[in-house]
Length: 178
Image (cartoon, rainbow, N blue to C red; front, side, top):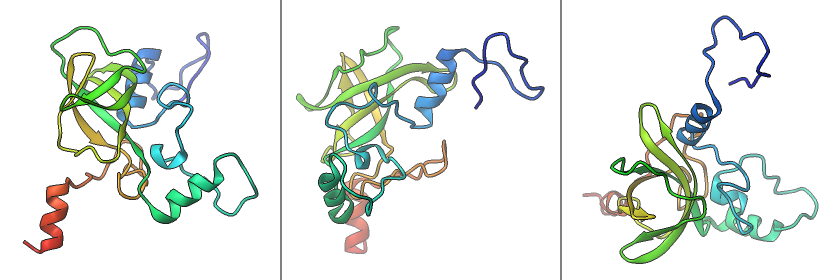
């Protein structure tokens, strides 16, 4: 991806797109925007942020980051939401996300993707079953975790190529050897 000034010459093999298309591609790739898809409590492990140095000197939040790194299980996980397209409007940033009548997360950015339809990024509590349907601003949403809820690693190490996160049922079947 290349961002150019409006009057710049576009390279021969590039297709120009607007900011809305760029945002939709960013969301589909699972790349969070700090401050929009995060809040003041977000730690790097929740959003799969690479490059967090574990041996560097003191920095704010170092103990929390190190504890999650060593013990696993960040409190929330970055999740791609596939929003029901029956409504024209998209959820507001910061809107509460509910599952089974209880609040389980907060909405980040959302966009209308040319192929996938309405999508968005959200921070969802770790314990929420990945197969559970969510609701945000009255809009039903399916979820695809982008950060493994058990270890805090981003499951899209190559942008746009995500490994599926197993559901709890799949994990139990694997553990039981069924």
